[in-house]
Length: 395
Image 1: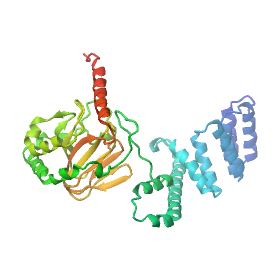
Image 2 (image 1 turned 120 degrees about the vertical axis):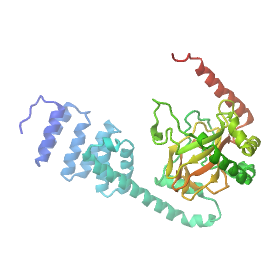
Image 3 (image 1 turned 180 degrees about the vertical axis):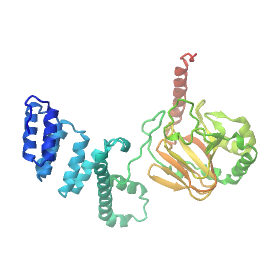
Image 4 (image 1 turned 30 degrees about the horizontal axis):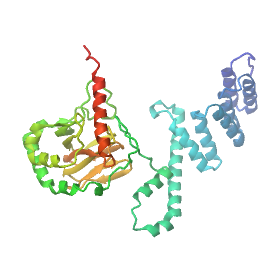
């Protein structure tokens, strides 16, 4: 092969790739060395040198070349993917999985992935999953004798930590879309003992349900889609439910405003809500509503607006096949049993039945806030609205 001494580095690399395809690895290495003398900091050169060394069966040299690429660019996707494959080829499955995991965090989306990389990426995902399962089994085996000493303990939180350590699941944190109030715990479902009034709420399930049925019989047209983004707003995961009555609501309170006609139609429910410690922030909270989820409908994963308040669910119409996930914890509702959860942790709901599901939803203060914090927070949010209202409306 005749080469031009003045050609570009890319030209040298192309010639080296051509030589390797023809089986002339020595010539390929020679061309890459000449390219390196011109551009020693170009990661394309050691990347191709690694391919040549791998083709020659010299995996040690190939790994050294890939480390040279990563020294120049630690986020070089192809180098990470190749290094994982080489480590796996050398029988170092655990190290390979760690490198594959790094590669997958920066991998292009599947629809943007070159076809030539589809197979290697699939192998990387499989290797990471295999490693996570093997590590999970190892941890469980090592912990089993000690766990027997604590068989009466509630170890749900520890079990989740094991899964996170193994990589079989991920850690879910609070992700409020409006305000993250610092130093509040990220608890998916809160301990009932913090809300002693839940038993009083649950005792009124039949009464609340009776008023709900009256709404569904006489005022179902007053139910409105819960998701209602205006035109031009990015809807993200809400495309299927935007302006859809498949997830609809009948509001008793909405953003701190009592819905008088709805409360008049459901007076006993409204009176009970007035007795409960709802989060009360003029212009913001509470919100209380009947939430109606149509058959075969999924509310996609999402997070709420602010972690200073928590959400209460009381099931009223509950067919089988309805589930609710907050973070790594999935529960099935039970008719007449309420729970309190943090909606700023990713959560989703499913109605896999052929009937609609209805629950009463309302918000309460996070119990770890002081009275002073509640008052100050309310004024701060009102001040924020006042600030943005200073702009003149668009003409």
